[in-house]
Amino acid sequence: MDNEEVKQPKLKGRQKHPNHGGKREGSGRRAGSKDKLTIAGILDQIEKQSKGTNYEEILVADFLDARTRKDTTLMMKYHQLILQKVLINQSRIEVVESPDVVEAKRQAFVDALARLTQVNQG
Image (cartoon, rainbow, N blue to C red; front, side, top):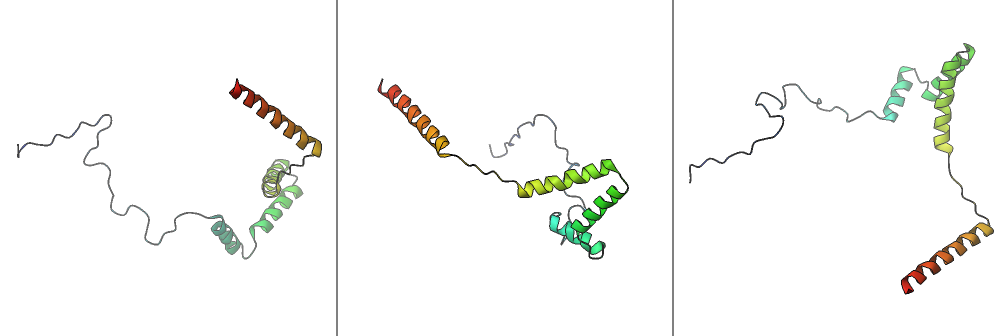
């Protein structure tokens, strides 16, 4: 029994070949590379490469240029972009309930609770 080979289970589907996969010379990220792009990093690069002009100023200038050229398609895209950003940042939901609405909800809860307790007692 000492010399008995351990049988490997057969793999179903695609078989792994010895000459496929594994790390190759020179592959992967370089030492010191950053993990991912960030919005802050992109905005910093835009400001550096545009000699100090921030992205908002560039966006407004491009929008005004599209208006001057009467490029309605591009203007609508800018409107959509700007409004989506504004709406996301400014949107909030405010729930205002009158005393009548609160009383109606309270009464509905009492009625539902009464029905539930009758079911349990019966």
